[in-house]
Length: 510
Ligand code: XMP
Image 1 (cartoon, rainbow, N blue to C red):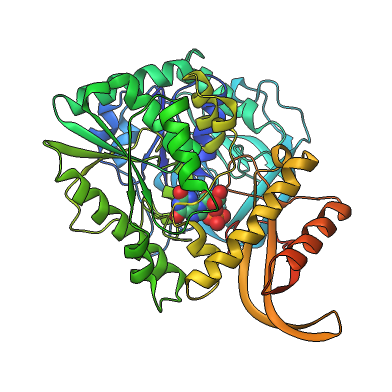
Image 2 (image 1 turned 180 degrees about the vertical axis):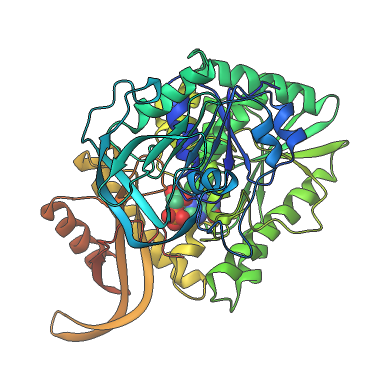
């Protein structure tokens, strides 16, 4: 397994992975570990530097998150960001307390001391703050590097020990010179900039080979880019030990099962085992309205189906999944972040599951997966397919999932996809789908009153799914979609457009 150049200790910020990603974009291989990783785990990765991320806790809380103090004795450069900064201050004897001015959003920094860490950063540039605690005094041995209007000690460092701390988030795009500072830190650590997706593919293929040995891997594919990339990695790494399974859970879109089968068999040359488990899934979902319950049931039923398939083969020890970092952070299984929703392949795994997991994409984001897909030779239409969630249409039907609702939603969705593709908008958006609201409203068709279901169109722009804004579709296009859905799908008399961003909303409705 490759060593990490830089190791990020995750204290639960929703942005932690962005730190790793900003560094990887600059060719520095960076991995995350939970904030409480043991010093042995940290040493085993042989990092050249350590970053302490932001997080929701306060250092003076009874249940504050602390890392192993041993990291300060390793002699490695350390960078603390937001909570990480407060932790460095606190551990070095400085006072940290609730700020009288909480700071969320933009601020400007004034550079007090020019140094390697600030090389290339322009004075008075914009940074992005999100903190309610403040470091009130400089810890011993540290010097102020920059200040902001509300933070006298906005960036400070101990140049001898190469320990740096910053109050703002350099990893978010709004911090103008954030990537420059992260790169400077990597330079201080002595990292080279040689990492790329090709080297990531090689390391993952090698790691899969070592892990699988003579056992077999069951790889569950959905037709989406994530599982297709995993299947391509496995097909290169362990072609003889691979069983690729596609499950029709009854929650797919029109013709989806057929398209996936064709794609794998014809385009990727992978021998696919297709299982129709739609009745099982739909019977389990009967009467269930709660989004988290739906997600857990679907996750558990998937594993049950995989388990039954594995019994037909010998030595199936591993289950490979296209879990991404986004799924992990929002299901809250890394570090200390809060659960947003249980992504089906992460939070929905039952305790009785016997498979060991192979998740080669755990550390990366969707756009990085796409780059990897291209690197592995997958075609552009596979790589640039819109994401489709594991729990499928179940989380796009508000309330109970039944055949009638699925039918309505499928018909509406086909129209939306057709209109987006014919207008050239499909490729300009991250994701586009319909949601069946299960809300009846009054309409008038012909001369008759109608009282029927409403559909919401959700189309978003995003680069990794962690944040999103609604797509500014032309009104004419929206009008075409609305007119066709209402005219062609009997049972729907109203179409609305979702204009919420993520955050505070999420992309899917459940
Ligand atoms: P949210 O709704 O969390 O969605 O803003 C972010 C991205 O993740 C997809 N998504 C999922 N993908 N299993 C998946 O494989 C899931 O359980 C799941 N839930 C959401 C969603 O479609 C969007 O692209």
